[in-house]
Length: 110
Image (cartoon, rainbow, N blue to C red):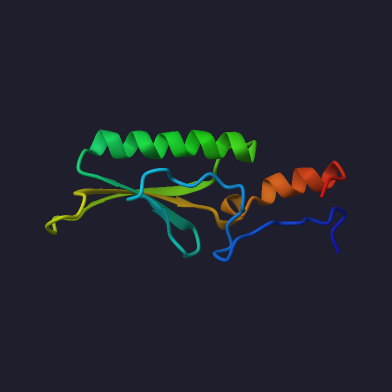
């Protein structure tokens, strides 16, 4: 038993309900350990800027740096698909809001 019980508010995908989501409809958070958060665009600087913006918002919400284990850059040259795919491989616990919930539990909040 832990000293501070932690209450996580998760959605069906195991992500924190309050976790900032990528804003662009082509971007997404995948469902695997060290979840890739994907940003797609035909313009690489735009995809990178959206990734940076999401990292800043998420870090502010999380209250600490997001644990990113890798950044993967790929391309998709299929007709009608955005060319660049930028993926940030992020820690599941961060995306579930564990640090936020742990701090709340220490303060006695629910």
